Image 1 (cartoon, rainbow, N blue to C red):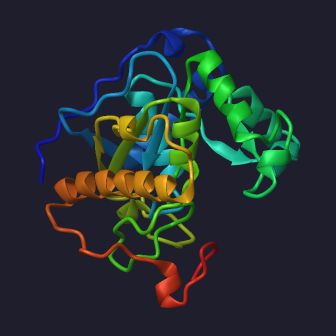
Image 2 (tube, rainbow, N blue to C red):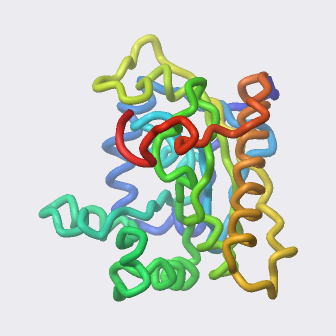
Length: 258
């Protein structure tokens, strides 16, 4: 396994500004820290400023909290793209909006949606705010029986290619000990260790000027998933299967539990 280091919480300009994140961090992080400790690889870092897309692996329903806390410790504010319908829920919707989360419509609707549902409108907001967003390229929890990244979807790559924002792969390992895939409760004790490795931005220069057809999207998506898998191999000290898990080849649905 790659040598890891304890996190050193960094204060970026956006993190120093008072915001709802201060309240959330003061409420959530003390309890979270009782259950979880982080170990980051020495090269793990996020841009100190400017917009970015962070693309992690996904194998536990508690992953968003784990990754959100990791991004906070790395000095940036965690934002996610969430279903637009969630923003209509009283109180919860206000909390999502106040913390800068990004509403998007489901695929197929987004292109005709307005400001509260169009991914490119969301990208424009991120660029204007110099903010980052976390997008899970698998779209749901991996179906791979050994929790390796499965076939990726195009959302994160398409957003990066269309917006020009850096696309950063990241892998984490250890969350499954806190909450196994599809488990209904946490296993907080003894305290769990989550290892995190943030990679270098994916080089998308070879796709510049090319039409964003399915071939380009598929190539870029494979490059992203390869990068995430390589980071996870280092964290786990194991080699991933040569063929990435494809739910369609195993009679599995693309979404929901299986």
